Amino acid sequence: MTLQWTAVAFFLYVEIAVNLILCIPFISAQRWRLVFSWRIWSWLSPYWNKCFFTMIMVLIVLFLDAVREVQKYSDPEPMQDAKVNPNLYDHVHMKLFRAQRNLYICGFSLFLWLIMRRVVTLLNQAAVTLENSAGLQAQMENAVKAAKQHQEDNQTLKQALLEEEKSMSAKNQQLKLEVEKLAGQLKAAEDGE
Image (cartoon, rainbow, N blue to C red; front, side, top):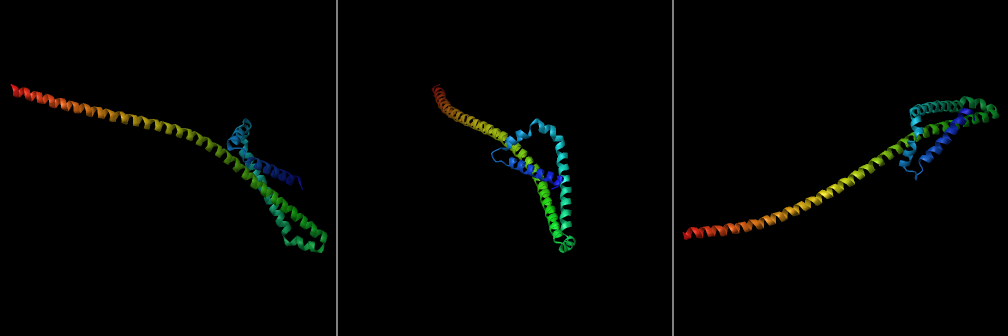
């Protein structure tokens, strides 16, 4: 395997390991957010997009090269020459196998590079959403407590108002009786004169 394909294979293995680590279920999104907020990542962040797109371009170029190699050794022309010489036939198949292997390594590496970026983005979004939902949950609980307190105050005021109305109606009855009594006394006094 040439140096470039060894590097791509190593890159693929590292990507597999990182993706597996990112997908470990007992490490929460908040912890990953804490890891991603380390100072080193903020120092590297201006270069991250450039590095990401550079790797995409390198992997695409290598992928296209691997596709070209597969097509080159899949053509019937090398096979016709190989039918004459059995060693050449094995050599062409060996080259075809290597080209296909390189194609798969490069294709999976490109795919996992895109997946890794998406997983990191989703972990950050999940952590932010969980933080926001925790804040909203606390606000909702405070609002529910305030609503219950206002409801209790409202009930207390309603009871006080009902008691006040009852006492007012009792006072009104007493005042009506007193008015009738005084009206009767007034009438009796007018009649007695």
